[in-house]
Image (cartoon, rainbow, N blue to C red; front, top):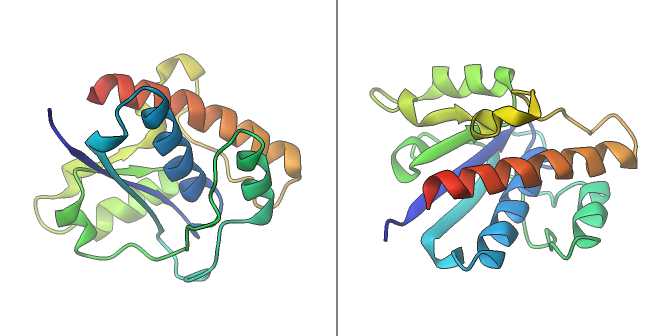
Amino acid sequence: MKHHKLLFVCLGNICRSPMAEGVFAYVAAQAGHADRFTLDSAGTAAWHTGNPPDPRGQTAAAARDIDLSGLRARQVREKDFTEFDLILAMDEANFTELSALATEGKAHKVRLFLDDAPGLGLSEVPDPYYGGDEGFEEVLDLIETGSKALLAKLI
């Protein structure tokens, strides 16, 4: 069985990408495939380096039995393009940034997170940072659907 290394990326690494890391880990574990994945998350910007995920995201995730409390924000590094099999951008802006940062011959690893969930009719996971709690719930729903679709493709 192939082992997959996935990196989830948003702008600051305190909302969407840590939620995606946590939700994908949960979905993979529920399906009995946790041991087939190495997961991490990062941001294209370094503003929140070392900080935990947004408390609103942690609360929304915890209500679904997903613990994000141990995660800490970091910025994308050059070696990520070598270490990870897939680098999953939450939106077009981060996809463009990651594609520009990709080391030679590694841009093919960069994809939009929702690429495998075309039934959603969305290509981007919206940033809930400037909204209310309901935005985090909506984003978790999108990420759960995207995670299940990605898991199905990879296994």
